[in-house]
Length: 182
Image (cartoon, rainbow, N blue to C red; front, side, top):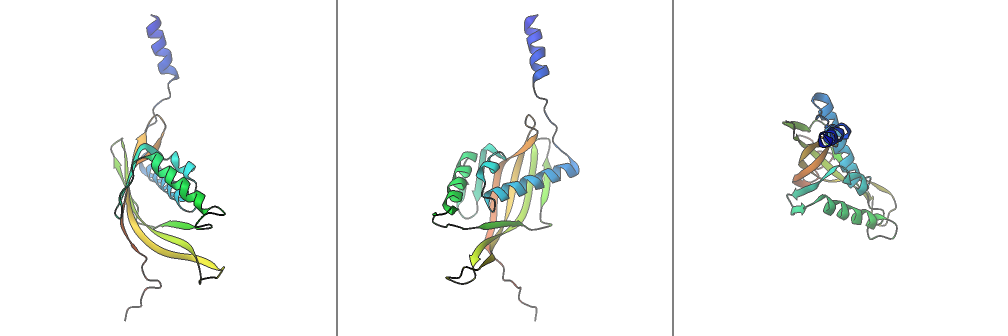
């Protein structure tokens, strides 16, 4: 009888598994995760904030380098090193970069109750000097690409974690302003 009572007490105190969001709530959750992820890795330079979004088995495959990261710990540590280099006295001291999502390019596909597939396009910018030796700087678009993310729903945690990132179609920034049609 005590084993049954212990089991019942354990079940009563265990956190309930949260259902995966659906509809607009699902899309809004993915959008918020996407924004936090890229802010932390780029402009915000806050790898610790990003760590909570990553699945421990995270991996990133990149079209220019192949397997770029084989774990959450690897990408967080790499980001931590890069952010430290930007600090006063670091090699690229004051370096800033930014990722901008291309509006209207996001596609979210539910994968049963397991998770979602997110696909979108983004551009990259760097805060560069207007001219060599000048202190004046401005944002310059340096390239763009496409990404596909697999977000796994973690019912015990009531949230998604990024399991895999495919980073594709990287290329130079398009000319701006665009050439006028003749």
